[in-house]
Every structure is written in structure tokens, then in C-alpha cells.
Length: 396
Image (tube, rainbow, N blue to C red; front, side, top):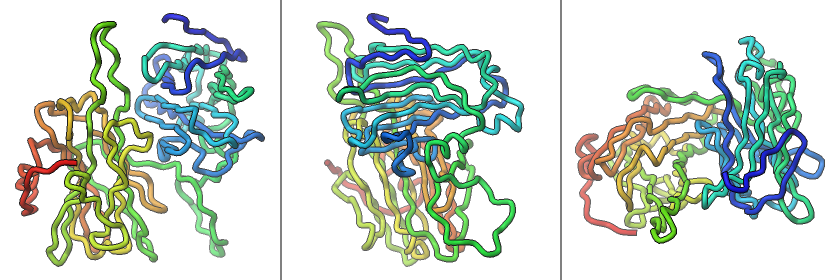
């Protein structure tokens, strides 16, 4: 534990480092209770300056502000040297999904703990353990990171909030859309862009979902890969840990209706082009896993009718195969669609490559199927899916 500071509600403490991991844990939850943690980047009046300042399961990262959420682990990564000067406070919250309708509240959890750790060393800096037995609410404002005299401090809050995630987000100034509209407005006004609080997780291999058709088509399909960015810790005073973690790469094979085939990947420098053929572009090559936003493939949906299929995959360019440690997740985003999440939840630590998902053009709709098939390399995967490319050794 070292010099960890244990706080009670209302107390605060200075931070000895600006790069942090923040873990939110809780007591045993009743069967069927679904918990979500979120963060709000707040200005001087306690509101978000824009909807992108709301960090939650459908919008888990702000690369420029140094905030990453790993929803399944209820863990935040914060780099407090990155937020812009208008961000004066970062509020951490926890909500119970559909808690009111299910008759669930935080008293059923018994307790919630917020643990702040040094990003590099893993040393515990501060801890706030909250007894939630008296809390009959379905939302909690857990804690805050805030600026004080050009430095950052951590404050334990533990304040209950009536309502779930949507009322809480609206309280902080987020423009939120309903999950579904039960009654159509016959004379709608032009809607403002709104945050979507819905998501779909493909749980089982072979499970599929199709994106909804829209009259104006799809403008962009974003495929994001994020993985465990925890650095390898020191093994002792005289032993050195590896300088870098696993180099995991996002990539895809593509096939057009007219028969053209190819790949978009950092290996060989084939980053593609969003506006020109092949209408797929890889944004970056994150060599260390330290990028808050991971890696993203952008598919130009305006040309979707020309595609036949796209195979999304990831491979370990450097490092020992250890997929269970990587904890990778793919999130597929498209305008006015729920986010689609696919986790690498089965492992083959003797293989270097994993085929994650297939995107197929079915009557100009996008059908997404979870694969999670492991292979020793590109050629083996190519044969399995009948692509027909020739492969040579490449480097980055």
C-alpha cells in the first residue's frame, strides 16, 4: 500500500503524478444488475463544453484530452497533462442500467471503491471506499479530479443522484438521445446531433447483426481496436522489464464486387485512402499500446455498394502471443447506429493472428459477424476465407 491516502466523502488530496489508472470496484451485485462507469470533462461552470466530453461505453476515449475508459474493467486511464485549459474538472460516475424499472439501487451493492494508482509503477496513491447501504439512488457521482493552483487534486464525493445515466448526462449538459422513440413526430424539426446511449455486444462466435438502412446511406464506418495499455512492471531492482509491450496491429482484407482484392494494414505501409480507392484508411500504427485511442480503420460508407466483404483482423507484430493479457476489443461505429462491440474473449496463445469480424454487403446493407478465429499468419487466414492474395515478408 505504501503511502496511499485513504479518503472519506468530502476529503481531497494532491496527486504525485499526472498519469493514472483509476479502478472502480464494488460489492457483490444482485443477478441481472448492469453497472456502467462514466466520466465527464467539465468546464468552470460544471458542464461539458461539447458532447465529446462525455466518456462512456459508446464513447470510451478522448485522445486529445488524455482520457480512456475500459468499460468491462471499470477502469480509467488518465493523463492529466493533456486536458485543455477549459477542462477544470473530471467527474467520475457510476449508474445502474434500468435500475428504476428493475427495482435496483446502490444499497444492494453495499459498497463502491475508487482506487487511484500510478500509471507507470502501479503504486496506490489514493483510495475512496464508500458505504452505499443508505443510497437508494440509481446513479452516483463517485469522485472528481480538479485543477487547483495549476495542479491537479483528487476529491472523494460519494453523492447520490436520482435517475440513471441519461438524467445524469443531461445534468452535466450532454445532449442525449433516447434509446428508442416510441412515437414518431409527424412534423419533426431538424434534430441536433445527440449522444447515443445504446450499444450491442456480439457475445457468441458466429453471431451477426446488420446496420439499419438509411435513405441517405452510410457516410462512414469506423472500426476501432483498443487493448490493454498497462505497461510491464519492474520485476525488481536489478531486473529490467521489457521496454515495450505487445505491438498489436489492426488491419483488414477487402474485396470489391468487381473482384479487386487487397489489404489495408501498417505492415508494408498499406495505410489506404478514405476518399480514393480502396476507400478504407488506417489512422495510425500504435507500436506500444499506449495510445489512448488505439487504432482505427475508417471505411467510406458512400461507396459501400461497391464492396463485397471486408475481413477485420489483428495480429501481433512484435512480442510473445498472449491474447488473454491483451484484452482487446473492437468497436464498430456508424452514424445513427448503436455501437457494436466485439471482444477477443477466447484465446489461442500459440497463434499470432486473430480474424475478428466479417463485414458483408447483403443487398447494400452491412452485415457484421463475429469470428474470433486464430491463425499462425496471414497466408493461413487467407486460405481459410478464400481471399487469394500472395504474401511476402514485410516490415514497418
